[in-house]
Length: 374
Image 1 (cartoon, rainbow, N blue to C red):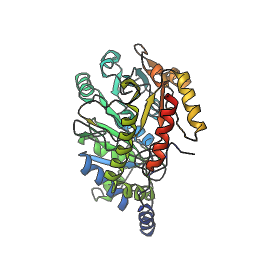
Image 2: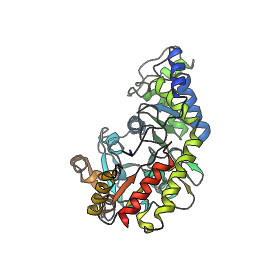
Image 3: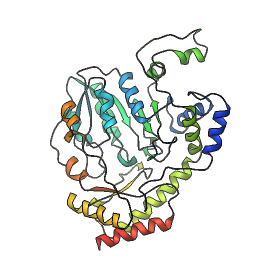
């Protein structure tokens, strides 16, 4: 069976985990946590990076940090993972869904302004498949209406928009290191990038259960106390050790994945229309997080998945649009016409792509895809 994904491994993870265990500092913010955070700050030019247990935790921290209150509205695409919405619903917000662009499956930036009301507090662009949203337009809208921009860059580590790292463009960026992502911290994991210096001190307090423990550890205060609302948003030092091994090989992993992605694109562009293939706009660099194709209809997609399964190849589809779910109907509202979100997502299917994937395995996938379309 050819799997859709195998978690990335570079070979030094175990040695770093053993080093972390030997340090007797396992609860977070140890040696490897600091190494990871500095790597993000130096590599992506962000004011402050903080590791978290997951991207879900990063988004929840962000919702607290920008002071989301009951009745606030937050604009985002419906085609995203549930955590994107849940983080703000937990604070009492109403989610405002708008349509996606069919070429990138990202939020349609031309529809955002019409969805803004006096209650709007934030825009949450989701960089689907590691391909950037149109951030210049989104930032201009946010500045005009005095809104926060929280980037859901769960899939976007090592991708850029006009030479700026995804996650380091808006006020806040959120990363995932789940085992399905390009870089993993041992199954789960995340990070939050604080790009507005005014938010750093409070972010550290919220992350430390609402205390100023970080200031205490840095010698700024002589004791730490409860200062604000917060939660336990620190990951284990073992997760950080696993992740740092992968960050040291970030370019190697990125180049390997891009090579696989380009192989798929070269072969399938011979038989498929551009609208059936991933689109990478100009001035963007993606990280080959996924390679998807779009079938003609949802019924054809089901036949494709079934055919590939008979060939022992796993090819899953992706999100069910949130606005069509029971919770989406309860906590959100779709503004404007659903021209593309539902129909385009019902045609999309993902192909196996992971670090270390043998070329002969990819060739088998390509062979079977071509066979289906022939």
